[in-house]
Figure 1 (cartoon, helix red, strand yellow):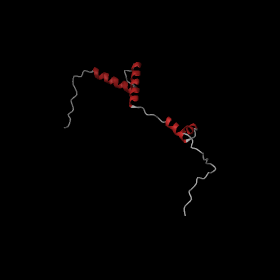
Figure 2: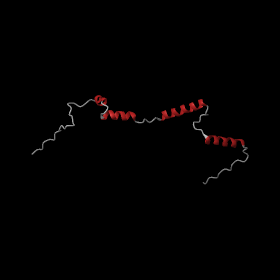
Figure 3: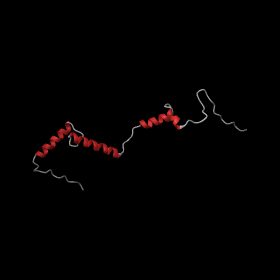
Figure 4: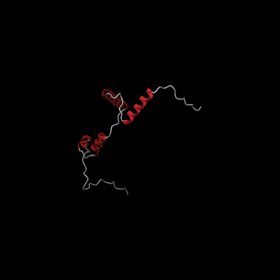
Length: 105
């Protein structure tokens, strides 16, 4: 005895269409899965290429130079302290060079 094929039953919440909706029709409906996926893909964070990252840093350096910051982007109390220490070192006469460290072979 052969079994009967299962048939799709039409429930109260399910609508069966004569034809499958086209892609454009699915995208037009904002609640459809395809429209939500497309919107999520567009909203996803886009990573910059290496070239774009380099362009960003070059623009920042040019901007800093135009602002008169000597090409440095970071500054603050610690940077000022380091600059003062470096200036004091250069002013001191360097008669006795530091002994070279021996490396283990």
